[in-house]
Length: 492
Image (cartoon, rainbow, N blue to C red):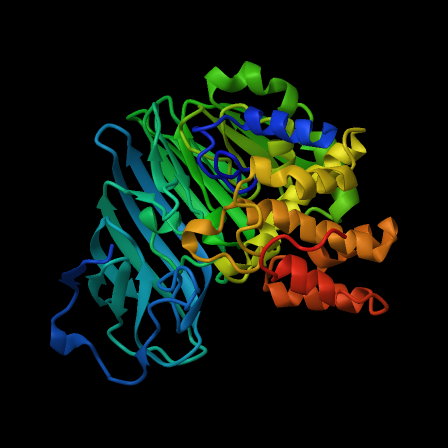
């Protein structure tokens, strides 16, 4: 994402407050110099619940910052979403078919869903009892599920999806726009528009069918699987995502988009959707998509997905850019560095996804460093010059730069702060310095992206990988001072 006002790029935060261009000028100068309990029972009467084997799956996977995110007792393998949206009145009607495998004997389990009215839940075709507990939809199947059993949950729901305000005051979830909506999920926003296990550690494939009024287009992840217009003029758009996807990287954009398709090098399909008001301003940067993808594949290895592209909505429709899978979202025409950042995330963050939100620097630090590499390869400031400028003067721009180490944000309000992005990139550069060999460093980046392709990783996984790739190098000081240490480390 792209970060908060005074932060460079990165995940996202509040760019609408201070334009990203302000940050770029400053860095150039540096280099030059619901928790209410809701009773909502549905389904068959109490006596129809079946046997009592198993237990309830955990209401969350225990993320250090978002403990209720995700759910225990099962792993999701696929989401099938059939949605119908009417912007007038902000009305969404949906059926979510969640395919999963039980990892324990289950008498009941949870799905994350904030807001919306649940009309019916079925498990393996049988009506199931359910209740609401804040963001938890607690489902009790008519028969217990055995550990190892594959099962299907079908949820019918409707209502007006909510916009979620995070601890750092950014907004996600269901963001209404002038002509439709933009659904963004980092870190927990996807639970506003479909039920599921909304934590980055539980990835799945997706099929999404969205019906919208005449004149509107619906864009999601993956590849289009056709469209059909009914006699009432409403059109259903279908999208398919085969590769594992963290729900935070799932998106839905509905509006009056100008859509272009092309084929890049290697036969890679590209789908780009741009709000008509942003077509002219976006043209120059979007035209460089083939060039950026060639550069990124040389730098990070083979592209991990079956298509690429971008969604460019209007400025102010979101307060940040986000690395949604296959086609990142930009609020207004992106700058070149932001464009590179979000595309680099397809390797670091989307394919290799942090295991928990504490590991956010693995996504943002590497994507920020990709900006440094791009600038260096374009003949601008070298990564070493950027590193030195940040070390010497970075606190003048990012007042919180040395407030905490990248691997230990103090809480959920800080996972998108400067230490995660800028100091995270500095950790990567310190690894490069320690290797004294750019070929070895680029091999390390490609190897990391390949080793964890479509999976998850913890900070400890990264440090162990680096040490294994270069056993002759002592990285202990880098980890203790730059990755985990408090305050500004000694000058390297």
